[in-house]
Length: 140
Image (cartoon, rainbow, N blue to C red; front, side, top):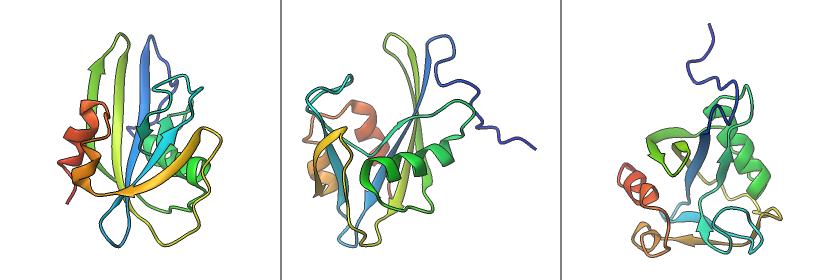
């Protein structure tokens, strides 16, 4: 049986499918990445690991791939905590996940310039889109 989350195209008629992950360390802090100044979306802004779901990829696979590509962390599992929808101007469906960090070396990709571990309270100070703050309220 095919997963209900199989995505046959990541841009279906102006629909964008995105994954983001709250990676938490043993101190309960969240990993954030600073986007490169030449990034197409939100240049120079802080972000969570994640990105676009590729053609015929499901969100669960996409988030693990994105974490590996952006941080070099070999994450083996992530749990979905929230799904947001928005129209701006395309329809964007964002799957938010949470995962535990297991003390691996973090090597950020060229898409980012730095990383930091921050408290959930400080996450709200980073000028992230509101959907990130709403999703963070679903963390346990």
